[in-house]
Image (cartoon, rainbow, N blue to C red; front, top):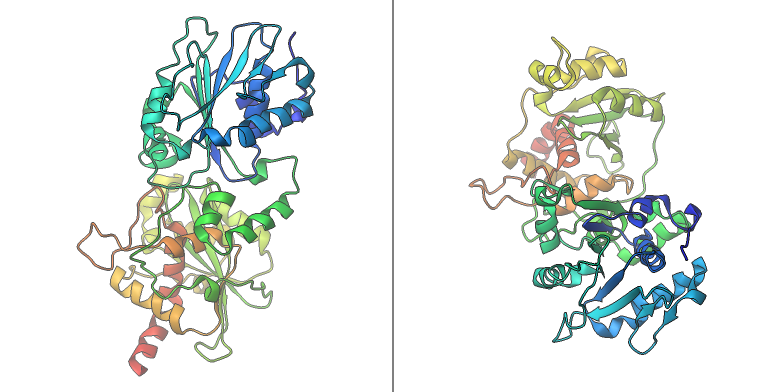
Length: 444
């Protein structure tokens, strides 16, 4: 008997998982995505295949098997209508198809005899594998050798709890935490998901649940909502004046005020922050609001088109990385001769010369750090919109590069510490508030 399940029974994001015969499956991301249920469906359906199939489903603690995976298999089996064809052993939590002998076998990795009784298994699935260690993975992986297998597979699902976790270092590229390590390319299905990929929940309501649970913790937001790798506590913050409760607040777009755009230039992604400010600086009723951020795997022309589409009636002023005034960069990136990034932005946004406010050079890290912290500490009504999630994340994790000799150098790489949006924000302050902050410090 073979079971064919309608695609409407699971989110489209997990179609490749349901049908994968890859040697490894790595499913990771935020909470509420539905990735765990996709494995319940996948391996319940495998019990009805005409070939030999025997799965070991793993939990770090054997005592959790009954209330987690076993209960999940029973729940999903009932939902998809296969319960009556299977035998569930409530004593040892095996699940059997009596017609062909295919079986799901539980194993807790806290058992002193961890791998005993797992002979001739053809597949392994470890949910929350982040709770185990690399030696557990290696011991289990070596068991996948049954000559009776139609295919051999080790599947793992987890929330990416830490940038320093062995899963990150083992399975992902050194320079890109969301790209496979070269050793696993060609034999691994990589699936990243968040609550936005779950077609069976009220996404807006669940997002609010996750935000409430995070209780303002940017690291929890990063892991549970964005499905990104967790960052350890910042013990040497570059922004010692940043306070999430003080500086992150809902701000309104003001149609009668100009928008100040600040760009950073990298091959990927292209980024920009949008800010509005009062004309009088430093008065008690003055304000500085970062209202939006733009980024994507798109070119500069498309980014500018997105900005114009969202704020089509606004007046723009432009600044950003001083390197954007170099002509060879525009030629290298966009194939435009005799053009700089800024001349292209001017063209794409339809701006006049007076709207282009470009610095001849970027501030040193020392001066930039002093400027940023002075503004955060002392400027009235300095707020960042919660919509600027990348910038807020960058501000929280911005740290001093302890490998450098400069005690003010900002840690940057092309992985967890890209800091592109953060650089946009720094360039904005340099252009429009550097002279103000110097006067303020002199008075103080």
